[in-house]
Image (cartoon, rainbow, N blue to C red):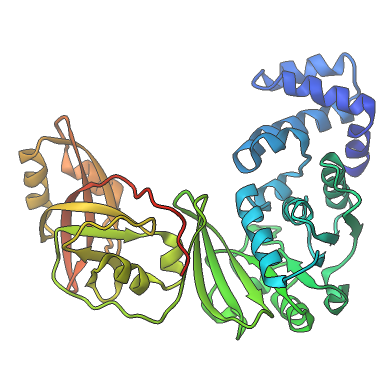
Amino acid sequence: MDLDAFTELLTPRGRRALAEAEELAGADPVAAATTLRRTYDAALTSAALTQAGLRARAVAKFGADAGRMFFTPHGLEQSTRAEVAEHRARRLLALHGEGAPRVVDACCGVGGDLLALARAGCTVTAMDTDPLTVAVARANAEAFGLADRVTVRVGDAAEVRPEEYDVLFADPARRTGRGRTFDPMAYSPPWPVVLDLVARARLACLKVAPGIPYEFIPEGAEAEWVSYKGEVKEATLWSGHGAGGRRATLLPGGHTLAATGVRAPAGAPGRYVYEPDGAAVRAHLVGEVAELVGGRLLDPMIAYITSDAEVATPWASAYEVDDIFPFSLKKLRTALRERQIGNVTIKKRGSAIDIERLRADLRLKGDNSLIVILTRIADKPSVILCKALPPARTGSSVR
């Protein structure tokens, strides 16, 4: 899809082609293209089918809004899930204080965050280096009636003057010609450019990959890892509001946990094992989670917590221990056979064992299910057999 084809897609004729393409969703691609080609030229047919396919994929991130939005393939891949963008926009407004902030979105992509910011009341000036991406972002703002709050133009993030705005928002592209990159120095714009923008901003909000190396987090910035339905989606770096440290947030519940510096002791296994949410692990908040459940670590270097009490918390999955023993394939196989286990969920931390090979070696038979945790206990390879407890159903918590 090129810029000319996308521009035509926004005309009344193009919108009819897109509507017809969406009606053909799930049909054989060749048959769908043949059907549209009876009315439309090849370029518009291709653009409509591409956009219909992207909208279908985007439902997972944007829900019903996906049916009104426009995308590029890379833009959809990097775009922020709507719930995460809304959380970030709410927090940005809270940190800014009174009034509607003027935000500069230095690399807006297709506009997922831009929409959330504008809906929250921000006035947004956005830019991207790619003319097609800019056209898509502008079309998305217009689709939701936000054009009066949003200005989108072609521009390089390096040319942004963040000191002229209340807030800098940046979501550097994390793809190169060879695919996704995990090296901030390979971001676009590169990390030194991003840091220069942050240094000149009154308040800055950076969206980065959840696996960002800790040494790249700017001094004095607060790093927030966000988990959605148990999956760590991204990290956000906040700068300029006077707070540093680490924070984890769970969505859709809105639970937030901030670092207190508490360190969890290690100790003997108890009746329950807790597996902290990945956002808490990334934020180095395992000690804080252990404190919430009155627990201790099974091993000082591994993020499994044990406790003698069952405590409801959104911050960890809880398991009731059935048995614990040093790792031995023969002993594990025997234990599962005695319990007539035909289905296992295998989890591991601190273990080099290949899960799929182990699953095959276990030769499972039976109607029962069990959770097998492979880990170290006091630095010794161990097996924990357990069953899951119901997930916690508590209100939002802030610390």
